[in-house]
Length: 491
Image (cartoon, rainbow, N blue to C red):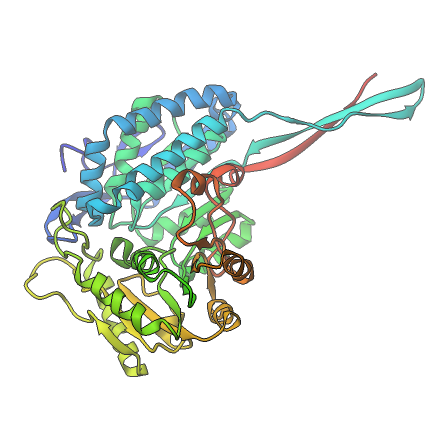
């Protein structure tokens, strides 16, 4: 770890590395339980200094006053610095988050694609001219016109979780900075090194002092970042429960909110679906050991093909190789900590008690004594009103639920407090499209959806308790701006 993180027990504030005031805490490799290193822990002094630095950088510094092209030049160096250190970053993601090699295209490549989009498209932002006209005025007709400007919101608190730490840090930091904001980033205490590594590269890129700051820590740090009146916008990815608490914390100062929260996404398999393709798509509920908000954890399968689907899904589970993600042949890694594994075990027992049929998994894997592993697990005959079907487990536990009509499938999909993602598999694209439009969710794929470049510019976010606002693409850039109208007349 010392070869990756250069500054021991230090936080990045106002362009400098400052000593953390609290005792450092060990960060564990979730696959081995070995200590990767001691992470700095920030407290009130560091958060106060970071917010003050960001406020000064925005109010008086050069960053928001640079042209989009000038900011793009700095952010381009930031991007290039990350690309150049890809091998180090991927090793860090594996050791810190327990990510297997198969999902590095999401953990690293997808994040860098978003960073590239933010730099290239953010550099092109210009004021939008309003249609000119004329008015009657003293002395004759006068020409009137105006522009609409997109200006940065101000100081952004960016708070990220542990599951995709590098990716989520990048997709918040790059758009926010590119649009001229100043950022204070707080990572999960489980994955702090990914954020500190980002700060090292940002410093090398030449970002102005205070434009980007990183403070680690726990609940106290988070509450300061969501309540301080000097903060203008909170960008948070995490659970809906924490999102609701942050909304209450930010309410007295009327902060702008940008939330990407939980999910319980439906994977609908119609009677005419290609079952092999549907099963391959259904296995995506296990991305990163089920630790993904958009994972399709509710499999709604037409009863005429449900038995065949369940059989194929079980076979696909048996083909997974569980183990240390540092082994490139491993396809299924650990959960982040023992507390998360205990949460998974609780929901498995709840499903058993509710009468659901355990098909595969449901236990800790035999022969693995270290690490926070749990077998990929799914149940059949699940009641859509059960806790397993309604609550976000954030682990490798799926639910198969039968249906008989398209209308029933849509009703089951919508019978959820969440609405983040979804999938439909069918040979009838027209019927599938109609269903996609009827589902109350932020995004739906049909037969696997489009290629990654198309998904890159599509807005990402959820309905209901799955979030507020959208990330990615143009909407993701605009989320960090305010609109200003300026009108004028000729004299």
